[in-house]
Length: 475
Image (cartoon, rainbow, N blue to C red; front, side):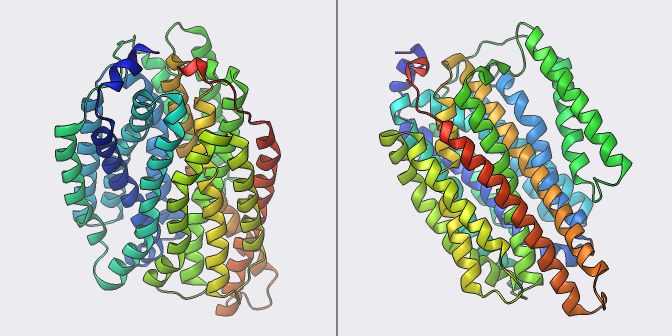
């Protein structure tokens, strides 16, 4: 047994896990509170969808460029130091959002929040992997998934109720006491379980990572990225820096990201799966509230209630999928989950302006039921294949891919929706009519869902090759 596991076995895992999960809950609750509020904030600040989406895309962009550094930071600072710093940043950002006088300050507050979340998520995953042996990680990760997914359960309805009843600032006021409680609880129960090696800091790799991921994500966020030279230029520059980053990581002795993790086939397959699924998931959860409120004319509260059953079922099934993973292996849960996601997207793609609330609710339930059987089991399968010294790099890479893919997905698919809507209006006999504008949004959303369906079908074919390999490497 690994020395670190032996040390962790003497720690009370329950209070440790609770401290981590409270922090994760408050961070993910805040993110999901805002998703359903975007249409209302568009009207509040009088900005377009391409501008307001920066409250989500910018949040994910900052997390994406920060997460790669956490593998290094966790080798320099203790578990308690990392967690307290992360939650302090998150609390400061939340306070700034609550008092922001305009969109620019609100975005700045979101960026500070993202700095805290970017430190928190990889730390949480690495600590769980250090606390639990491989044969119990599926259940522990499933519990983490359950708590994380409680936020989408209550987030949309709660944000809708606040937007419809109070002021949007209460989205942040209510989070402040929960964040404070998380810090106080962790000060009593959170122990240090990560091993400090204090490797050399390669600042050049940090710069390459930040510029590369930042330019790629920002390039995709341009409204007309496929027709504007600025978008091409940013994507080219970002890709160049990422290639230089890969080249440097393969040459230096102590890389920022140890890319040897991709020598493990299951880890690499899961990485592809994570990228595509996060693009689909983040884009869908951003587009659905806009569709429900602008096409179906639902209130923000009604939108939240409509999306609640799928999120509830997702949270309930997270621990179940973790136990099934431990007992039967990854393919037993991942393949059926991807199949359900594909069916859901196919049904969404066939949805028109006459769709009923029941239809939307059923499709959303299928989508999130499938997600509960894929995301955490797939990542656990990939990480279980890595030697222990590579696990921090593996979790960092997965979390980086999640955030970057989510940001790209939102920006890319909102652009595709806008392009589809514009094409519809271009061929319309009366493009100024309200009914035609509604139909144009439906056409744009349908285009997005068809593309997402094709991507998930491709991932479904690839997932057949995800196998359960011996876990002795992580023991």
